[in-house]
Length: 165
Image 1 (cartoon, rainbow, N blue to C red):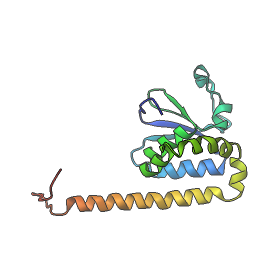
Image 2 (image 1 turned 30 degrees about the horizontal axis):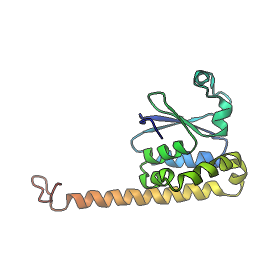
Image 3 (image 1 turned 90 degrees about the vertical axis):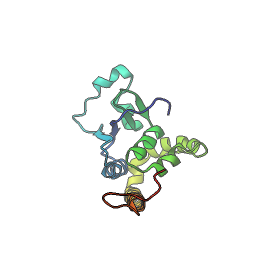
Image 4 (image 1 turned 45 degrees about the vertical axis):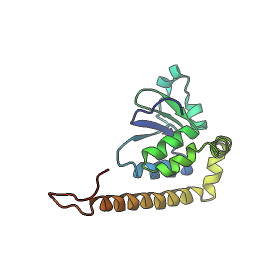
């Protein structure tokens, strides 16, 4: 990704695809800071005409996931997953999406997954992805809660004896 991201980011996804819908809705459920807005670009009433000036069509959105940040920058494909996982508070998973050694694999695999997403959905992949994300999100929340408790050890309402570096 090159440009800085300005939140909220609007993610245009295919809600008619169980794999896409499960992943995006699971990520949105962990988005406690409301950094993501989800828009179903497969809906019959979705109007993609405003995006034509940017060279974005409904067909391109349905072919590859797209997102637009608050300043109007467009992102697509693997970049969207990196941003979405970060926005959802799953920065360790976002790091996997951005990892320099793994990124070429994601860039090659994602178009295949996008083309075959409806077939993959018939094999139960959406439930696996959503379940794994929920487990990972719970682990992140537990880790954050433990860190918050640890940060307050030695503190009371008036004084904190913990080193505050």
